Image (tube, rainbow, N blue to C red):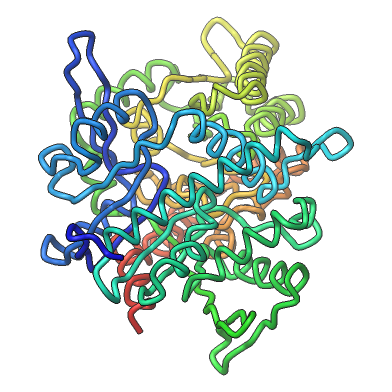
Length: 486
């Protein structure tokens, strides 16, 4: 039964919404708006589209805001967007988000497990999986309640893999799509999951009319999993498109390579706060003739920061001519510090940077400039002065840093890029590409990038920027929307 509040023609569902709240000591709530492709996309369709964004309360401030508003946030806090924030019980949310989404599904798709020791799917896992099911059901209930007849629903990412199937059962009239922002694991690795869980994830996503991915590679891996785990049929159309046929339903697969927002980045990168950070970075670099190798990442295990630092150390060891002539600007912003493995990884990044500085530093030269406090303006400042961008993830759905740096770099940058990043499909031709596990080869790639002639580097950077901005966030969102409406 659809409630009287229902009526949204377009709905987006994601774990994180467009706004977050902090609660002051006096009980007042302060809203902070976020950005990204979904925000840009919903803005692009305009206020008359009747759109609603369904998200989860992530912390105590969010929970309080959801309670005070009955779940429907004040549009004054959200930039005019209609947002329904779900107050899912904190223990259920933690088990679903940290226990399953970030500690199981993320690890599977990024192939991060040390398999002699992990994973181990025991009773504790089963309790967390039950929370993941409840969390997904809460989203399905809210979407069913909010949607107008025949509405279009775009479900986002690995947190919500069960939602399309659950929503299909509740509202078969809806047009439902799911978009994966991560890589998709190959079938042999995906089958590490318990059989019933692997099936549930795939069946959940096949409840949608479309399942979309950042690259063709990830779409094909999903299709392979559907065939191997479910025995589903993979159909190829005349244009090379893929569909999954299973139990009488057909789910079309799509590829939408999210790009950088050039207009926003170029404007934002030249505001006064970025200029201030740029001056401070130049002082830390210590000389106008020194080249820069820039990386900007969260201390996410898949980002491969430790091997990147080891490659830089190998560069300095093997090519002493670069000593005192290059500085590695490494921004490693702490991520998921409520998980022990992430805290340990963050500590290792700091330890290794300090070790390199102690081994090679001189009174006038600090080889690694490491910043661990998230600062978007400082990241943009680093992009502007990047001679080389190092993007070497173990696996990555896309990696927007690889796309953003060439857009902003003032003199043009050489991109050292892992072949396991989704961005490789679009940028590989003009990047210096590496096997992310091969530290020696990455050191050689850094040397090649630093040695590149200015003219070649500038030309490559122009081509990289053009490819990187081919599908900006608003068009990326609208492309998915239109594909569902076809």
